Length: 376
Ligand SMILES: NC(=O)c1ccc[n+]([C@@H]2O[C@H](COP(=O)([O-])OP(=O)(O)OC[C@H]3O[C@@H](n4cnc5c(N)ncnc54)[C@H](O)[C@@H]3O)[C@@H](O)[C@H]2O)c1
Image (cartoon, rainbow, N blue to C red; front, side):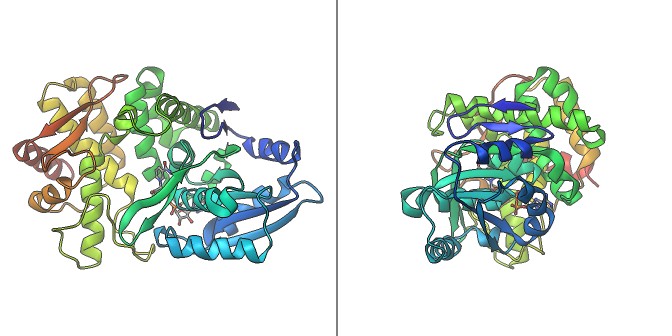
């Protein structure tokens, strides 16, 4: 087990991290009462593993929200504030988010704002939440269709990352989280990049080690740029310009809204069961296509580009591919752009940061075509 420090809450990562949660709950100042925030899936699959860690004599309330991104909204935060008030919650009670990134983002936001901040800890249960959403202090809700429009940075007193939860996580969600890990590993380079390809078939020790490396990498960037103001975290946008556009247009198709005018950061709130495309699946395709552009520019060495793209080709199915024209319009609204040019965080050799650069529609057209021919 390892502890990775960052200003927004140290993360204890490894098999048995749940026991560290129990130790923390018994340490002074021990909370009198715990509010667990769960969705219906993590209530059933994950909370039973967490509850035995609650010390004797500590009261427990469970707040459940429906699973899916649709719960990450101001109305849900309002009903959670009201529920806390009805239970007479105090600032020194602790709210513990037990769930994926939706639950940890919503839980962090509610904890940060209720009575100007109650005690907070996170138990991430999806792979994406373990290596990404629960590390770095960002919390928030969506506003209408604008993702993460309202939120704050808030410090968790502890983040307890136990791979045990992967046993019940649906395989599609595992693959989606792994896409972000592949990105972290490439940017980190060295042993991390050399071993990330083993994740899908890894033994328990390797799974633990790869999650630790991924959390450590994200925590390092967060430490350098805690408020995400210095472009340090820009590297994390690799694959995301194309990825966000694919995601926005896949959801737009489901809701039968026209692609034009859909902002890259804006997704229609859907019934989670429809799930046309998960964020991580879009990121995997985005990494593949942006790597084509980066290699074409001479930024990413051919052998490294080939290794990254063949890893993605081996494990990810073709995503719904919108027309480049529709995607281009969405990409022009990406938050990295200064004008209506399209900027991407382009990869270099493993272990290096990205080059933030404007790309042309012709470069994207080549990547689009190559993707369509490769993923048949
Ligand atoms: N704060 C940040 O820095 C940050 C970074 C990346 C993503 N995010 C946010 O994270 C969210 C996406 O996170 P996500 O992919 O974890 O989605 P999610 O929380 O919706 O979880 C995905 C699905 O997996 C289920 N689930 C989670 N853990 C489970 C388990 N162990 N067993 C069975 N089912 C389980 C959930 O109930 C849900 O149905 C988005 O809202 C995104 O904006 C935040």
